[in-house]
Amino acid sequence: MNVDSWWNKPWPLGGLLFGLLSLALAIIGTFSGRAYGRGSRVNRAEDPSKYWRTLIVEYMGAAFLIWYWLYGLPR
Image 1 (cartoon, rainbow, N blue to C red):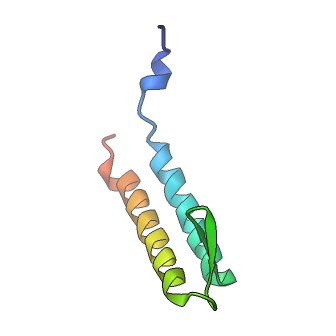
Image 2: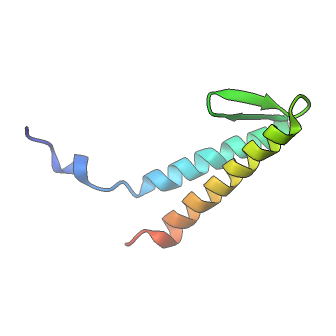
C-alpha cells in the first residue's frame, strides 16, 4: 500500500489548535454558565461542582497544549 509522505509527518499545529479550542470552550463556559464537554453540557446552577471541574480541566488542558506547542516541540 502506497501512503503519501505527508500522511506520516507530525502535525505540530494540532496541539495549538486543540489548545485554542479547549480555551475557547472554557471561556464560553465561564461567561455563559454552561460548560460544554464530553458530549454534554453542565449547568452551573444545577451541578456547580461538576461545572467547575469541567472548566478546570478545560483551562488546564488548554494551558498544557499551548505550552507544549510553544516550548515542548522540537523545531
